Length: 69
Image (cartoon, rainbow, N blue to C red; front, side, top):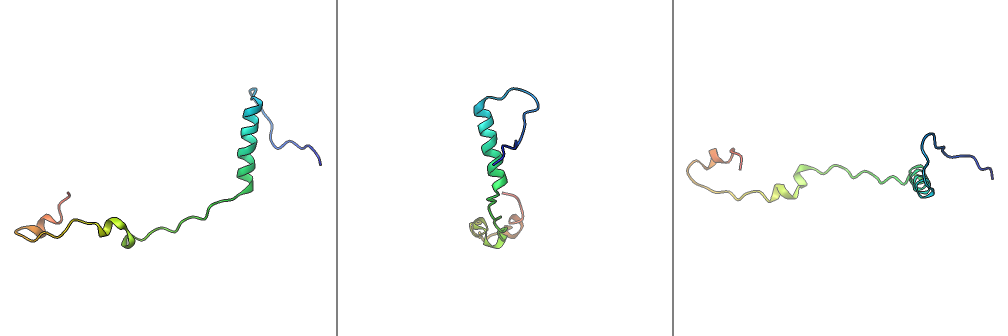
């Protein structure tokens, strides 16, 4: 097995711990392991859409329903 450099330090003097941390990050990134993206949820399935304010009948209720709360 050859000891080919995976990366090289261009500037600065990193410690052994810093190089080890960088090696772990680059190895994990190269391994992939990407999580599958969760499909977007429909607004119809939203929990908060079902938890809306109760209907309140009365004078001007239809007008007040369009006002911000």
